[in-house]
Length: 542
Image (cartoon, rainbow, N blue to C red; front, side, top):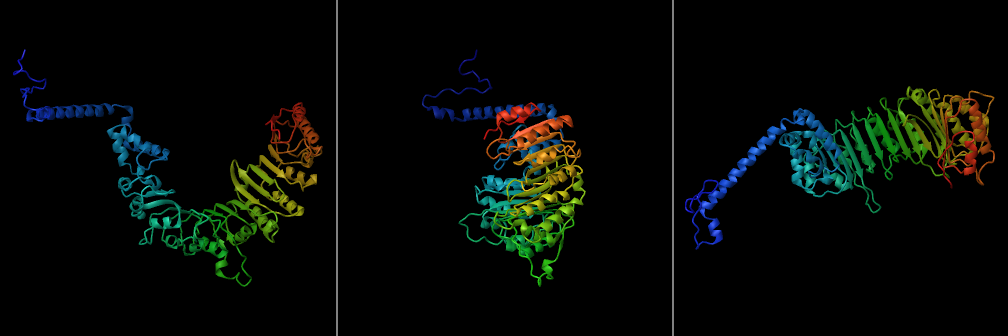
């Protein structure tokens, strides 16, 4: 045993003799104690470093550690994209804390740092760190909400020459603040989306001429929403632009404006105009003006136009040439008291659109068709391949019964060879069974028929015509939506006609599915129909 003067600590350091004249703090701060404490700290650090090294060696034997860094980087990119909140290092950065090698891969993968949402970055330091780790690569910037720190804007906009994808939603001044006035070109910009927020108290919008006049040689997608459109006249020619979307409920494009833009974008594939047209037909003396010359969009694959008047759509289509195979979506919203399709030339243009589209290869692929007239002024016609509309024309025609009959007979311009699903709504003005028969005979391959708001029995009467076996001989499914079997508004002939149809189909090609949805029908009527066939009823009771 050692005496007090001879005893040693477990670390081999002699204990000093206590001095009663020293305070406790003075005792701890003596040189010998400081030296012992430093030695202990150093030894702890050495042990921790050794343990860390052992863990690194152990992790090397883990199966996940055998993946190449390139595979890990791709996995991290998928994790990064699955997190919507990545502004100030939450969420997705958890993978960087697993081990040292994962952190190295995470930090060195530039694709994890080139996608910045300015609305979620909390500080300029964070923005600069992300920009530094992106290693001068292409940037993808989104700014859709107010900034948490205004200094973030200056840090990111200073790298505007690197931006490849930019999506801004805000006030006019905020949008302009992002673009330094010294820049005249954006060499890397490929997608530009500018969405101006509109409020009732807003002053007249500021022109975006400085932005739209920049040279963007690689731009392929341009989306403009509520932008001051007269400034689009300065839009630079964009030989690579493939997608153009313009939405504006207040500032409208004139016919020369839109034709000027389309001439500058000869390689356009996708054109969408939403409430952006208010066109005035050129006067006879102005028709020879070059600004009204026909525009040829030879590569167009999708045309979508939605505006207040179909006459504007008609006038635009008279000045644009596009492939007949293009996907066409046309929509007009006209009040019932207005002329709608009764405007001179509108019906002719609609007929021309359908005729040209019927010549395309896409027309032979369509497997579903709709012919809808839910209200007295509402008309919709179109075809689709599966769930993808290939041709969709919706307009509020507001015309007479004769006008509606002309619209109904436009179905003869639609493809019928491959149609398997047919959806019909309304058309109470079509009173002659022969007109309905023409529709069904043309589309004899239909296997599923959907009838909506049919309050008259004429269409059912046509389906029960036994004199012609070519009326939907392959029909397997029938759905009735918002029809009136019972009630004061019902036609007493409707239910007997439906019963007769179901009974006849049992003797011919039996129906496998019969559905009733949102119909005015009594449970007793459903029970009577179930004596004939299984009825899938939603038990809707108005």
